[in-house]
Image (cartoon, rainbow, N blue to C red; front, side, top):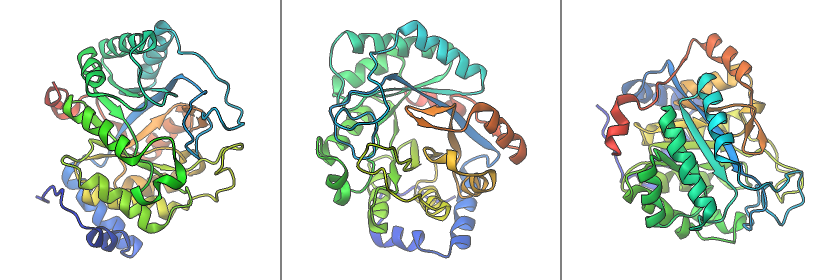
Length: 327
């Protein structure tokens, strides 16, 4: 059995990351098979329950109020409307339902009370319920846990060294504080990042180093490829190659063996063969549906074809009694 380690060094991760690509894929696939069913992929749905108007300045994000994009500001969705979307997602095969709000931080107000009701409702449907709402205090994390929240997403985005080039309206320490609040509330942690922001290879390795040396590895690590959006500072960034995605996914799989590694944004620009390589390299989770918050994503019919072609099956909700682990 491969040991779970939280004391990885930058040198070790760099050595893994820079292996010849076929050797890297083989090593990652071997680790993947020890800890996971290679024919199983978790299907998640991500819904924007509050779109646009965010005061942050994340350089990649079309929801930032300061950028001129095609995203329209919308108020928080009604609870009933969200629960209807969750039922539809479950019927389409999703087992995790994530609700995102374009907030800098959670505020203790009526909107947060409505989100609590959404969490309760989705939990009753029998799905793993996840939220991504920005920064969170320990008390707010406890309230979400009590409502039935299974997971909380709060991405690091990039390395600490490159972070200030992408975001200035909050610090890296703020992000780590939120992850701490989530962990203390015994909520499953979902945290990853984006490649293609103009970062260097050392920054990608730096982000993986931070994630893999947390006291406990995140239960889920999304690996996103930037989808450039007109009107944002990163609108002209070149497309990330499939080999860069594979290096990130495979390295994450090797250093965090138990973690679900999610092939997230950017999948719209990958063909079936490229996605198959990502699954072989250790990815075992995707977002389904036409949109990831505001950016395009393959639809359910395309993913149905993907699953049939590769003969993979959706992972059941709460597999391995994970729900009990976080009670």
